Amino acid sequence: MRPFAGKRVLLGVAGGIAAYKSAELARLLVDAGATLDVVLTEGGSRFVTPTTFEALTGRPVRLSLWERPLDHVELGKAADVAIVAPATADLLAKLATGQADDMLTTTLLVCTAPVLLAPAMNFRMLEHPATQRNLTRLREFGHIVVGPEYGALAEGEAGWGRMAEPETIVAYAGRALEGRTPWNGLRTLVTAGPTREPIDAVRVLTNRSSGRMGYALAASLWRRGAAVELVSGPASVPPPVGPALRRVETAEEMCRAVSRAAPELDALFMVAAVSDFQARSPVAGKFRRADGPPRIELEAAPDVLGSVREALPTHALVVGFALEDGDDAVDRAEAKRRERNLTCVVLNRLSEEGAGMEVETNRVALLFAGDRRVDLPTAPKTDVADAILDHLEPLLRRD
Ligand code: CTP
Image (cartoon, rainbow, N blue to C red):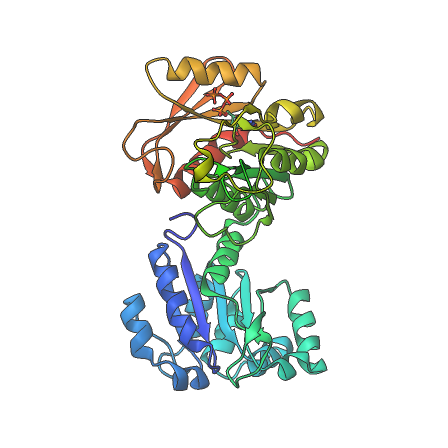
């Protein structure tokens, strides 16, 4: 899976209780396709055994500097990204002052690849000026500090000091691995999920969109270094790590959120399945069964793309999605592209196995100006998102 496939990842595990979460982190990295080398500090090995990581990675785990001479040089040079999770107060202090007296600290001193640090400790240790100064210093070195988060700590207290979740660390490692891309620093907005139009105080008009495709695109854009605002209707999957999430319910709210951002955007991805209709006058209370089937009068909901198109900068990429059925699917999608003046329309087919709403895979065709069409194979939505961005990349223009 991009960007981990074929990459060497170094995972250092220091001696904190959060080390138990690092086993899950190791599993996620291996699943993503990384070749993972784990180095345990002496303290780390008291919380999780080398056997755990050897079983998860299928590779030898390093504990001591003295097992194989020059192993630290080899490992440090080979890494495409290094992660220290948990990074204890002691380990941060050592790294901030360049101390190198064990396998992990020597390896990290050799490493020139991006280094991610996921601190985990009691909030008092975190707040101590020494730790804060060390973190500032480490950021100055260019290291990426992920977390810590607020939450329950091991001692039955709550505070800042919880290690970032493994999924969060993986997302940041992916961003570091991706490095500089043409999307770096671009301002992008992705809409995702369904909208929900009220009929009465409890009932809504909605659709089956899960949010997966939009969330995958937002995650991929963020990983490539773009600034991403994710305007999401009530989706049924968790939002990705990274993009700034703005939750909305109705087409009107979505339209307002997109309009506000439009003048500043370099790229807009309208992935959301926006309702075309809304109730003309939603009832304040509840329709009662005893009153019989209600007559609900509908009116057009705002056309988000239609309303914001003029406000977008002329250089902005504008991508729409079309869910179509039948033999004239391509013609209909192309008509939408032309009518709304889109850079590209992504065509999903409604009645195709492994494509469209509520499934984890998708098969799409990209339609560009000049009758250019690219058919992508059925793949997980995360891979489809990457392929879409790869095809759009040559069209990017900055203002
Ligand atoms: N869209 C929008 N505002 C709406 C409806 C749709 O901005 N009220 C956007 C969608 O996010 C998508 C594109 O327009 O990117 C095409 O959506 P679709 O529903 O297929 O298009 P419609 O023109 O509404 O056509 P249809 O009659 O097939 O529903």
